[in-house]
Length: 439
Image 1 (cartoon, rainbow, N blue to C red):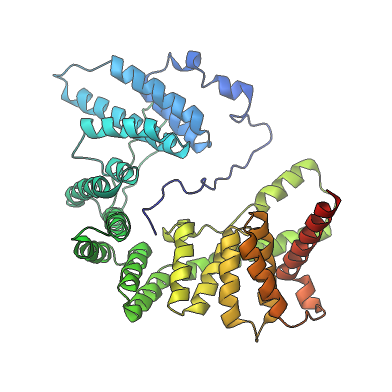
Image 2: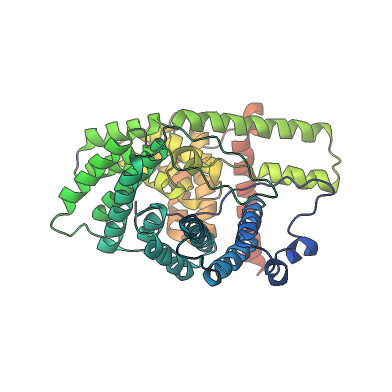
């Protein structure tokens, strides 16, 4: 499954734009973040401005503020005899370094982020575990393991004084400095600890699998992951992966069931809510077919709402694909189908997911529900061909030919999204063939 990917897809953020409100996309707002506008602000004011830019989903503007604040902090060192000012200065510097690094990682500027994280480590090696976890994800093999272990050491030290629940914090006023983020709770630290052990286990199952101590270290990490946080779905997924590699299939199945039990009810509820929203939107569209430009923009934005499995479980999209493959290998086909259909709620143009669900469908629906299998195989053929994978597209074509003749669509089938998707796919396929014939 590989190391956890902190940048595997863009964050799904929404902003409701209100009439008369000037957002950062305008020239006026952008000028508020120009170097000339920032140079007269204090570090505290710059941090407040950076937070505001982040809240408004303007990462580049936030980065400009953090850079300006860091430059001022580096040039305005406090007197060493003022302990409180030295502590405050260090806190703001670390905040700038780490926040800037996280934004740079989101922007794909890995080396710039690495430099800032390394500087944060040199300034405060014994506090703040996040920098070690991020650096570990940017590293490989034993270097990565060592960084995770350093992060784990910091987490364990922080656990002793961590609050059980998040304290109430007041928002900063215009006259105050930025409010320090609350310290992580024990539950948050346990989850971070568990995830770090998961990452170590995965490294020993992949990059370091040929090391003499790989199996021993991997097992220790797997056990530590579930011990640190037994409610962490990712810990049980890694446990299942380890036991599947060891051909301990019954233990692997039990671990996967435990994994799903921790979050799948939330997934089902989210899917139900999304389907309800889509039905409401379709109903509204039927009542009022004439939409003005603003309404159309709002409708397009609402239709972009997708399931986010990582937000619900902590397990990335790609790891859910790996989970489905594991389930197929363990003959948990109905579970695999559930996971794959949920993945399509998040990305309904993913060739690999359509292919896998078509393979599962051969076991589940070829006799009992061939139309369902036909739908998925048709979509798999379309998207595999679109990606240039003619071999898989041909495999899906062969599968389609083995299905019984397509029956006349019933009213319920014709009104369903699955049928319309298949019809759209067939139209796209026919259009593509016609274009090839005329070219």
